[in-house]
Length: 148
Image 1 (cartoon, one colour):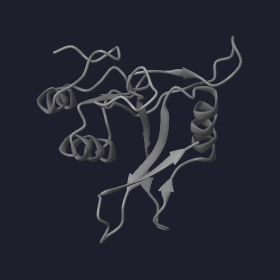
Image 2 (spheres, helix red, strand yellow):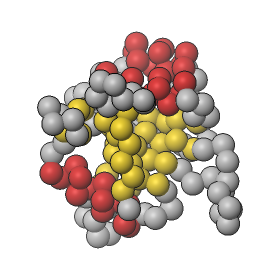
Image 3 (tube, helix red, strand yellow):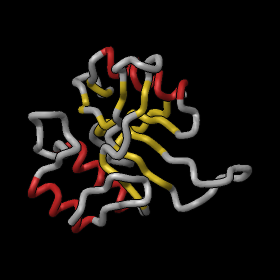
Image 4 (tube, helix red, strand yellow):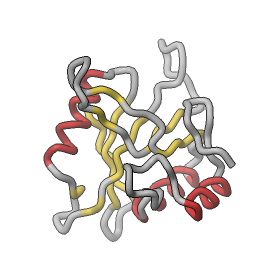
């Protein structure tokens, strides 16, 4: 199995399970464990909801001036199977999956929120979202907050 490296590639649920078993080179140097448990749960939930193409850490986007080393890598990219009215192609949805804090909201460092907000402003070609596990009694297992 090859890992997805471009927008045209995608993983089936079986390929994702195989990839989890061996680890992923998409993670930071020194961390080859693949998606964490929250990311795995999010993947399975989106696939069960009919996500046609869901890629794990498929791209890096620049969020600083040209020549800087300031990049942002979303956890997932979903390519919908529909084209919105007035658009030429499907608009990708990029997700940053976070853990759930004790207050019920996402748990993240301050720089994580700044990075996704910067990415949403600089790169309007996609929908940018933060998602985290919902609390007990929620209709869906994940909360999704769209940035922008």
